[in-house]
Length: 255
Image 1 (spheres, rainbow, N blue to C red):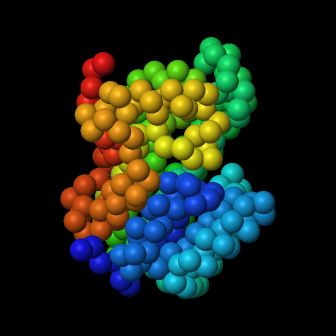
Image 2: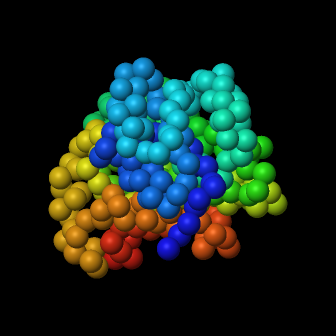
């Protein structure tokens, strides 16, 4: 059994109980980690407060990752409260709806910028802020998807963003390795989340995934949470710069 007692994890991108971030929070908390949860804005605050009540001594902070001052303020508060960090979970991705509904060729310059800034640059910004608090080493985790490698209809600019995110994982792993900080991504299969509902054809994605994956089903949120727990633990001490697929084997299939 994995034991994270005495360790602190900060999780960015919690939206609701159906989010992958919540499944990761539950896995880390069940293993004994202290949890700090960061939500984007005031609209999401009530949900974050309700979820935090289910965790022992959890802290919640508002942080818009497009705002450097908010990032600095959150990590200052984390330092005051905990002193050290051991795990950072980045579960953040966004693209304007029109960029997911139209053809990829019609992606606007602004939509491309927003997708990259929110979904990719935020990992760099958060890692830079977290690294000084990971004085005992640590684990940084992000969430990606198979659309980074292959064309997924209507995934569009998010596929390009996820490809950039995976490259960012490798470059951060190289920079932070000497500090004993590992950086990895989990590539989860399609899951019904608030964010996924913005992608056209989600029902078809889920059906085809279940039909074609070796396990003949869709992945569960708890399985992604378990993979995150593994990567956050010492069992994964020699793993960095990698993409771990948690997709019931879908990625290995040709057709």
